[in-house]
Image (spheres, rainbow, N blue to C red):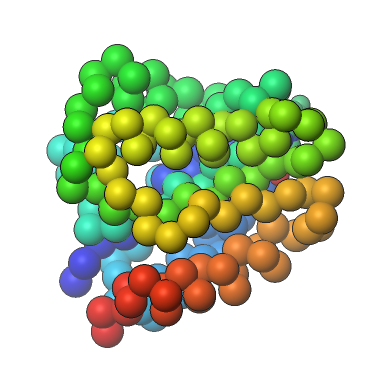
Length: 154
Ligand SMILES: Cc1cc2nc3c(=O)[nH]c(=O)nc-3n(C[C@H](O)[C@H](O)[C@H](O)COP(=O)(O)O)c2cc1C
């Protein structure tokens, strides 16, 4: 069975909730799914999944949530090359923060691209100003993502 890892960066649990809510959609599509609340670089290098989904919110002024800082630091320090990695990205933010809107998700996307990873489809950006419950936007998007990218294996 192919594997999917959902790597979570969250301050207040919204991104984790999204990860937990979309997990069954991937299980139904035939994946063995793990949700990683404290992701490390090794999760996508040493023990690489067939597919990764990042669910990452933004804090501070365009900053990464605390539980995701070490992943990013390792990514920058080790520059591992991620040519095999295929991923999707859901960024949570709030447009009232202006130019730092979804800053962490956008920066992560850039770093992954620099390492040669391939994003499947566009990044989803969920704006707390527009969407009260992030799941309401994430669930249909993931359903569409699985269909558009032909990710169903079972
Ligand atoms: C102290 C604080 C700082 C924030 N800074 C930003 C920011 O710079 N850019 C942004 O898009 N959203 C920002 N947000 C909004 C959060 O990213 C948004 O509410 C998100 O849904 C939180 O997700 P989480 O529950 O997974 O942490 C901030 C929220 C707080 C409380």
